[in-house]
Amino acid sequence: MTDFSMLGLKPKLLDVLKEIGIETPTPIQARAIPEVMNGRDVMGLAQTGTGKTLAFGLPLLHMAFSDGSKPAPKTVRALILAPTRELVNQIADGLFPFIKGSHLKLNRVVGGVSINAQINRLDRGTDILVATPGRLMDLIDRKAVRLDETTFLVLDEADQMLDMGFIHALRKLVPMLAQERQTMLFSATMSKEMNEIAQSYLTSPIRIEVSPPGKAADKIDQEVHFIPQPEKYELLKELLCNHSDELALVFSRTKHGAERMAKNLVRDGFEAGAIHGNKSQGQRERTLAAAKSGKLKVLVATDVAARGIDIPAVRHVYNYELPNVPENFVHRIGRTARAGRDGKAVAFCSPTELDDFRAIEKVMKIRIPVATKASWAADDQKAQPKPKPQGRRGGGGGPRGANSGGGKPAGGKPGAPKGAGRPGGGRPQRRRSRG
Image (cartoon, rainbow, N blue to C red; front, side, top):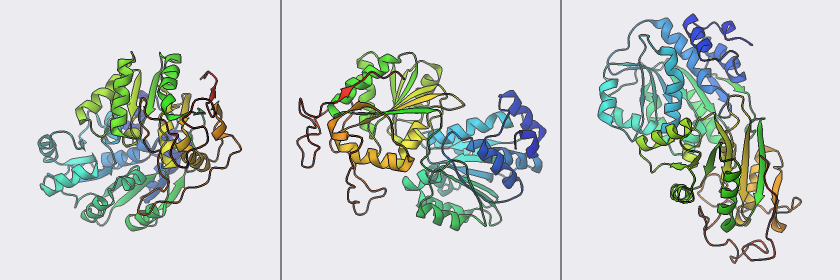
């Protein structure tokens, strides 16, 4: 399919697509929309930034416009579940232009904002509800909404919902829906647990895979700096200064680390802000709006917020601290090179993160070009795999004592690479990035 008009969508939807400048369907849209229009359940494997929202949103809207009737009070026709507030807002904002001025009602429910206002909006009935599982369960417990007339279910970023512990909420929510329903599940990875969810909630689904798990966007230029933890912050400032007029996204492992780094950057003269789970919904929305408007040039975030950040202008992504789940690296760098643009992803790897880095390269099936060399991270070095901790998802441990904006050297601990954290031996030789 090379044209949306070939997909059988309502003329109103085609007109809005033309108005917002979307002319050609992405691969996931071209393959998923006809199947959904034919009533099939769909299991989609696709990375962020591939156009999934319209892949399920357009056929959902087409069917909603075709129905013509109004939902009963407190009922929901179509339910879209997403793991984070940012992703809920991103989906709702992406669908709103198509229903503007129509009879359709689109509502969103997330935590961190007034639940009473959400109860009032849901009381009148909802055609399309975009929600996080936790807040939706709160509203169901208050009898503010019911799902027995919900005949369309979308599970977006289902793998992250699993990682964040929402599986228990899903097991409670899905039986509340109408037995005769159509379900779509989207995930960037397909683990054993994800297969079990698909088998439980989807009926004879068609599997659509448009981007192999672990594959980053083609237009992302990558590089890695092998550097001791205490030297990361100065390198970050240097690279940010080299591209001071371009929007940068910096990833920290922890909420406290992200907040501390943002404050340090502001102290050092950068227009920076942080987004993480400890921020209220209003604070997160204001920070994202400031980044989109250009008021902020550096946005510091954690993985929880990664998949809900859709700012096409992000030119650089800095992995200040590497994730210990390799697939999260792909989601992080997928925040750049969006909407056809180019982008650059820069990884900082300390001695204690070397195994995490090798796991990332293994998942992505590439060797990331080295910008800063170090004797403890020679290209031909084979990092020994770490034993998987018992009772933890994802395996692999993270760096101990890593912190944002400076900290104690990683050297001196048992098992630390030779030369790490000492003057002289093992000190990286860095070349200036030209990205």
